[in-house]
Length: 166
Image (tube, rainbow, N blue to C red; front, side):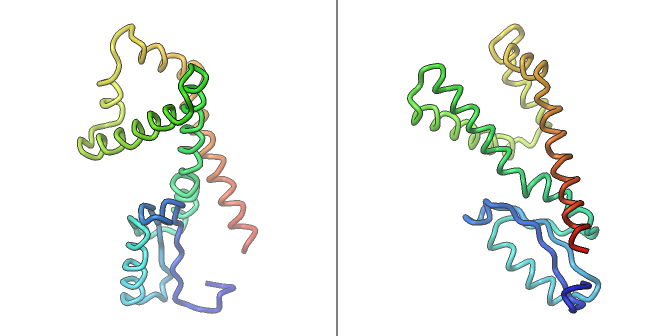
């Protein structure tokens, strides 16, 4: 609350899907915020999509790295898949439709079943099949490590930027 000169502060980390009411916003309040302030914040954030209230301000830097930056990771993944489809010979519009529908359907399927992602992934993998081959290549290429390191780098940068503001 230092530079704001106000004791009731709500800090929020939304993401870009909030522009269409499908975002997620992580938020925290200062000690000076009243229950009425919290209710106003929650009602406002519901207009942007889902909200997650946290009690530790440090979670905002984590949310910045995971969900705030997350759409960029998804868009890069989409772009790579679409480009791979075009490389194989699909017209771009077909590749885009296949990728977008696959992502949308996969998320909805996860939400409907809510099993661990590894269990759901294993439903798609046949021994010695195309998916097993593709996943083997992604593992060898360090896919998980690259994602983890990217999120960690964004988290560290968020903390640095916050420190520069103080």
